[in-house]
Length: 162
Length: 152
Image 1 (cartoon, rainbow over the protein chains, first blue to last red):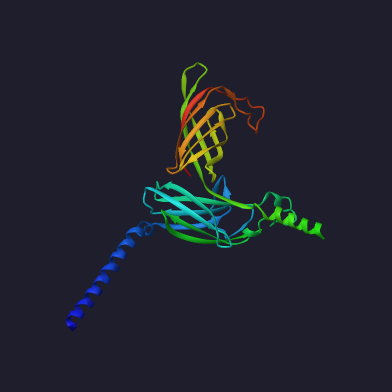
Image 2: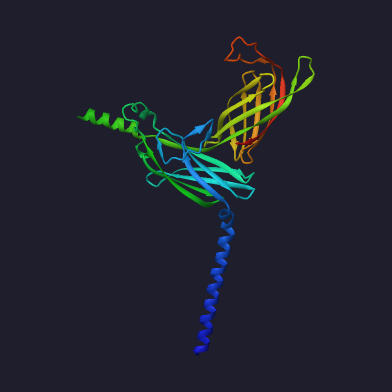
């Protein structure tokens, strides 16, 4: 094959690669831009006042706490969205998945989801001897991952102690 | 020895089994309700107040929570606990308030807005002011109204 022909083939491949990368970049930007434009803050808390979690971030919780994950976000498009929270236990197993459809009304939104741990009824009989009775599998490092409209927004680690 | 092992096994089963988790989202709505009260003269009169609704969505599609309704002018108030259903973001529930009123409420947690028809079918008495038990009780006439509120 003549050298000139090989050069043309090589150049064609390079151009095709560049176009492919450009298209992929555009696609990624198109689908992530709404989230990139949104500024957000995520924290966990067990402090609550009249049903509303307070802005007192914590990373350690007791077995009997209701654990709230609060998302404060602004700049999100004023339309309907869905929040998904995946709660993973110390073994990395997905224990709960919370779905919350919501509509953005203003520039700033504050929404939250919660997790509760329940000991077995039998274990309640012996919890005065051992506070962690029946809760052993929950003790350790947990993780919550939040998704907005199916796209991962953030992960947050926390610890459950009894 | 065998008995001891049985006790150990039983204890392990009782303690170790059936622990579980639950999760969900909660919504707090506050706002005003505007309606009318059938006055003692049988002439409808404007009647309005505030309300607060704490909704907890359970994972099995059943919701529960509390609702508080207050009227600062007449001292009539209502509220109670409720249980209802939720489908997607739409929820419906009924509760009986302290005056025997049956209230059917439906709303949308997605938009954070709530509209509901409040129908109080009978008269009732407000409880005395806990700070002043000798205070005259207030008779609440039948009234209807609509809640309009937003997510906190």
